[in-house]
Amino acid sequence: MKLIRFGSPGHEQPGVEFEGTKYDVSHLVDDYNEEFFAENGIEKLRALFDPLKADKVANETRLGEPVSRPGKIICIGLNYRKHAEEGGMEVPKEPVVFFKATSSISGPNDPIIIPKNSQKTDWEVELAVVIGKRANYVSEEEAMDHVAGYVLHNDVSEREFQLERSGQWVKGKSCDSFAPLGPYLATKDEIEDPHDLRLWLTVNGKKMQDGNTNDFIFNIPTVVSHLSQFMSLMPGDVISTGTPEGVGLGFKPPVYLKDGDVVELGIDGLGTSKQEVKDWSE
Image 1 (tube, rainbow, N blue to C red):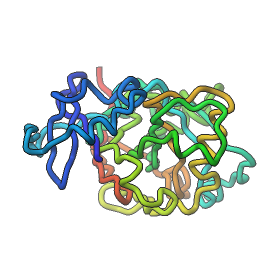
Image 2 (tube, rainbow, N blue to C red):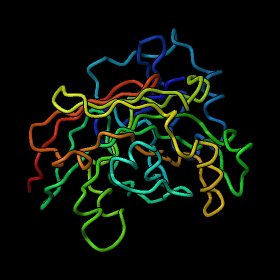
Image 3 (cartoon, rainbow, N blue to C red):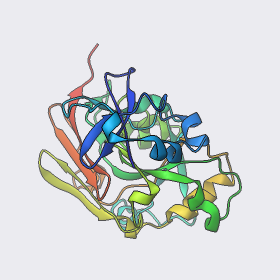
């Protein structure tokens, strides 16, 4: 299934995209939140959904993030060999882990807001994994049993805040609008092999990133198992698995986003999203 949430910000309702048409399923489920995933909501919805008994959602309706209020956004840094190389960094021996504030989440086509005092706002197309059931101390062999599905993510990053200011990366990752998610969550059965997906990103029509998840340093079972050794992965949590080469920081000289730029990105099987860049204002 392809799960969507639609409506104005803060008032989204659950829906599905089925055979190219969007449907309202708010008569069947409250929302795609921790409770939904924890209670086997995907399978229940699959059994209940009937397109003949659901209202259609107009194509022009705004899409929100497909997961409601995830407890955590956990990100994996330097998880593509070529990306580590372009940054002149050593390939990590175990996953590099950082957090992104959930307040940074926005809809797939909402604008990216360049934060106040920012000079180095950058883009990162990423495959994100959504947890379907609680994971604690799981093995790599068990890890995929805890995955609900996958979603397209632009891990927008302010490089000065992230790398040049003291503290942790989270400061450069958590500004409002810095986590556009969607257009939809594709359930696990929709994606034949998450380790062989093309992902790409353009800025103003120019191709900046064009990679494949087969360049992962740490695959999804490794990442899920590793994280579960240090924290509970809860239903609805989002794990973003890193970005391929081609980020603005990697160019010589670096290239960063500015007011009026248009970012488009996509992943095989997970659709596309588009964000207009706007300067912060009072």
